[in-house]
Image (tube, rainbow, N blue to C red; front, side, top):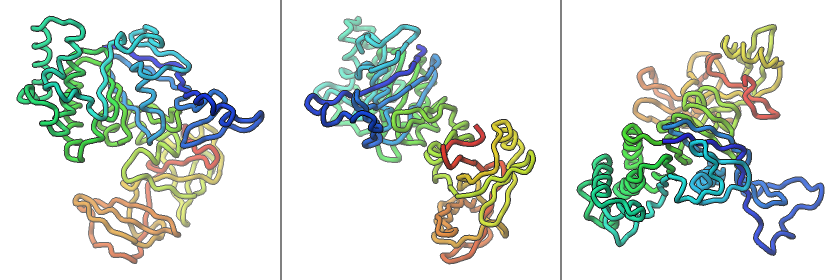
Length: 392
């Protein structure tokens, strides 16, 4: 159980010797980006200005696309990567130069990393044996962890005799027997099929309620992030884009990237006009004019936002099909059981609308003309220049 603080943490991978002259930029030459990473005179910058305070027993999820720096950040907390700049504190103690084994953390890897020649019991007991813990204490902790994870019946088996989900349970069990202050998990479910992923996600939720430790979890899967995290840290190109609860980042995305990354199907985006009339704000799209909700108008007024061209964002589940609104043509109608996902063409742009089957009066066929609209409380307006949400 511990608090974790990262203050202005930075990770730079230096150039390989001999490549420095080729890679270094000329004087006054702008900084380059390659594969989403910034290249400077120091080297390739993987993580930049990372600031985060994690409370005791909090479950934090780092999420973002491949190459955004989330796993690198986790490895710096673990001590597997050197911190190039900034400070890392665990329980108020500076950990920058502390060896991984002395940080009182445990890590669960994507590929399980089990010893193939050892039984499940021996794998789980290994770290305790290295600490020279008494045999009865080792046996007690291993069996308690096995019971929590429902793998008691597999203790005498070798990893090769287990399924992927069972191996992942063993890897988690090996971590929790150490009773670590901080549990680090690096995409632990990515090697599992969809059904097992759902099952293991539920197991991790149960686990965090049964063991008193702080979790830092890395994933590229937004479903895992939304269901597991107390708070989510959304990353892109080494920078934090937004920190908040799952509901906060869903309802109030800080910028265009967060809005498009969180939510499935992805948020619909439109080129629209934001019009200010006194203390009122309207968005104009396809000949329709919608007034924003009072709370949104208050935030826009507080920021002294003026009339301008904007990127309008509306989630598919917040978009309605009706008798009035923006004219569109049905391209594809996907029956999903509880809802129908309509792919519409509106002036050459693909728009997705989710229609609950309980509200469905007629079927939709390719080529049908429909009209879609939305309410002012679910419209998000983003700056064309900065891509930031104009409300914040």
